[in-house]
Image (cartoon, rainbow, N blue to C red; front, side, top):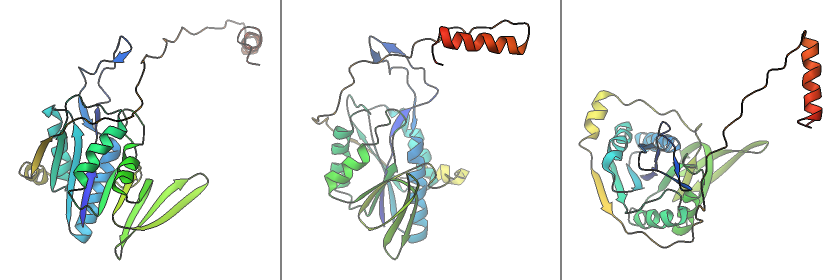
Length: 253
């Protein structure tokens, strides 16, 4: 089975967020593998171990080589190779443009299963995966919490309002997974060392035109004001004063 795992690089959660002239200043960002995509890598490797085949990591990013180490960590989990599409002026908030570039690469790979996280933790758009499936003309199941393969057919479970939905589908198939899908393993030292010898390809790709929505302006939330200490001789007295302020000042009751 040929499996392609979509891995998005997102700003590290410890990166400092700074707004300059209504735009996010990304110059000081450090990047990491999107956490939802880690579950996708683990699930893909489990399928390979049970059924044979190959797992290829596919990522679209800029020419910044600092991400290579984190992608190697995903290969240490058990992926066989990595392909990084390098694009000038890459942005993670253009799902249509990014889906076009990624789908063009996938067309050459004859994948039985394409799997990735349900969303990136940078923009939370949840759009790239479904768009890729549409461009490839294959079925798509989103937000999957459990995925099984039996007799060549995939069975996916996903949480819906008030219950659990179970879907069956044959390949080729694109799945986006939730964090509860599986538990990501910690690679052993020998696997980390072996990952350094696995194929790691970088390809230059050109930006494409798209009708993606553009962000007009960014801003940080307003600073919170100080709290108020209510004085009183007893707890009952303080409660009475609090209720009075909620009625006359805050006007919430």
